[in-house]
Image 1 (cartoon, rainbow, N blue to C red):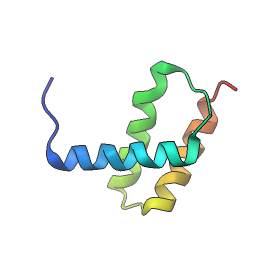
Image 2 (image 1 turned 180 degrees about the vertical axis):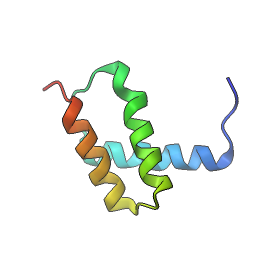
Image 3 (image 1 turned 30 degrees about the horizontal axis):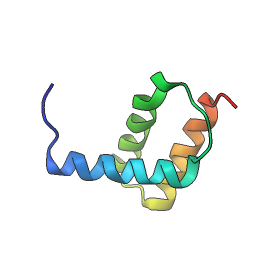
Length: 67
């Protein structure tokens, strides 16, 4: 597996932070975690600011939540 570039690390950190801030306490299937990150990366690629990123991640998580 290829190593992440600095830009990819920053994007992943931004997605991770947005996920934890907007979805803390929501249970999701473990195998869906990469899908959450992919949804976040797509939002970042579209130019989403932090609040839009949180909203898009939250909307995705609502479709896969367990509890």
